[in-house]
Amino acid sequence: MSASEISIEDFQKLDIRVGIVKSAERIEGTKLLRLIVDVGGQERQIISGIAPWYSPEELINKKVIVLANLKPKKIRGYESQGMILAAGCEEGQRPFVLTVEGDAPSGSKVC
Image (cartoon, rainbow, N blue to C red; front, side, top):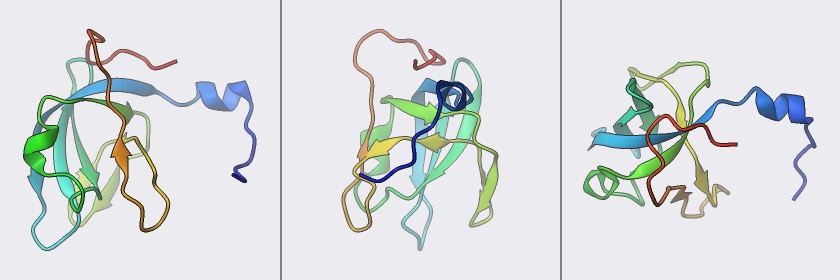
């Protein structure tokens, strides 16, 4: 692992929250899913390149971890308003979407 070290102040700039996937659909002709995620009463559209590994149906109602303050970006004509966090993101590896078990409500801050 060769990632650069960051300070606690850098980490505190990240707004990482629990979100609940309300809907999911494959973007035709791509490896992308279009997810609508409830992040504390605010719905966000998030575009994620996990379609080769996850069907839309298996993500609905999952509690996922969202980087909520990522600058919005247009991806294939859709605005992505955050990022779903996953483990195993090295090229060619299957990503494992990070989920939350238990009663953590949507919008809960990850610390």
